Amino acid sequence: MKFVDEASIKVFAGKGGNGCLSFRREKYVAKGGPDGGDGGDGGDVIMEADENLNTMVDYRFVRSYKAESGEPGRGRNCTGKSGEDLVLKVPVGTTIIDEDIGEILGDLSAPGQQLVVAKGGYHGLGNTRFKSSTNRAPRQTSPGTEGEQRSLKLELKVLADVGLLGLPNAGKSTFIRAVSSAKPKVADYPFTTLVPNLGVVKVEAHRSFVVADIPGLIEGASEGAGLGIRFLKHLTRNRILLHLVDMAPYDGVEPADAALSIIRELERFSPTLAERERWLVLNKRDLVDAETFEQRRTALLDVLDWEGPVYSISAIKGEGTDALCGDLMNYLEECREREAADPELAQAERELQDRMQAEARERIAELRRGRHLAVEDDDEDDFDDDDYDVEVEYVP
Image (cartoon, rainbow, N blue to C red; front, side, top):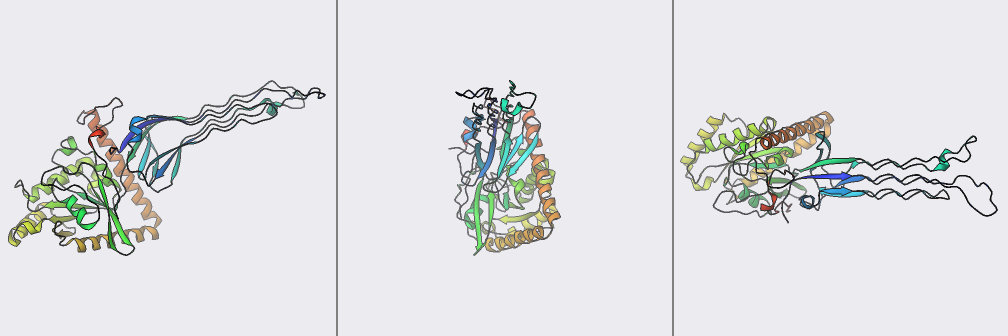
C-alpha cells in the first residue's frame, strides 16, 4: 500500500428509469384504463469522509465509478426500483474539485461528513400520469433523465494543528518522536522522511494537539528540486508553523542562510502561507558550546529581523520540548476560544485556508505546465506515488 494524496476520477450518477406504457387487462373488466407506473430515480454518487483511511491509493487503480440506474416502471401501477446510491469513502481532510470548471465542490474535514458530487437522474413518468377526463387512454410516457457526470480531482491535506518546516536533517522527525508516540524514520542522511507523518502530542489529560512532519525542503524546491513542493500543501490546514533550524549543520551551512532559503521557498509557493503564524525553533543546541550557539542565534535573528517567539531545544534529548509544547497548546486553545466566541473570526480563518489552498494549486499547476515535475503515468498525475510507502498515521 502506497501513500497517495491526489487522485483524478470520473463519476457517473445513475440514469432514471423510463415510465411504463400499459393498460389494465383483466377478465370481466372492460376498458380498464392506463396502469403504467413511473420509473425509479437513478442513484447518486456520494463522497464520505472516513477516519480509518489515510491515503487515496484505491483511486489510483480504479478511475471510473458509476451509481446504479433506476429500473423502468411496470404495469399495474408498479413503480420501478430506485438505483442504489454509490458511496465513495475518502480520508478526512479531502478537498473535492470539479476539474472541468475548477470549482471546489466541498471539503470533507469531519469524520462521516458526506457530499453529493453527482445527482442521479429523475424518474420517467408512466402513462397513468397523463390520463385526464379528455384523454382517458393516454399513450404518453416520459423517459428517465440522465444522471450527472463529473471529472473530479481529489486532494488530501492532512489535518494537523501544528506543521513542522525546515531543511532535511533539521530534526523534524526527531522532534515528533520526542513529543509523541509516532516513530518516523530517523537517520544521519537527508530525505529520510519521504511522506508526511502525524503524531498526537498529549500535554496533559484532555489536552492534546496534532503535529505534522513533512519532508524537508531544499533551495529550489519551489522549482521542483528535491522532493519539490509536493507536500507543502499539507501545511495549509495548520494553525501554526514551527520552523526548525539546525544549529549544528553537518554541511557547514550557516543557520541564518539555511533559514532564509526556507522562507524564500515558502514565499514562492504561497505568499499567504508565508505570512502564517510561525515560531522559530533552534534545534541541536546540545551539539555546540554555549558561546557558539549564542553567536549563531544572534546572527540568525538579525538576518531574519525576527520578532516572533524563539525556542532553543535539543529534540534528541527532549530538552526544551515540554515548554514548547505547553505554549503551543495554550496558543491553540486561545485560537479555538476566540473563534467560538466570534463567528466572523472563524469565517476569516476558513477564507484564509481557502486562499492558501488556491495559491498552492495554482503554483503546482504552474510547475506542471513548465514540466518541472515528473510525469510518469498516463493520466498526468504530478508524481509517481509508487515510490512512497504509507507512513501517515495518528499515534496517541
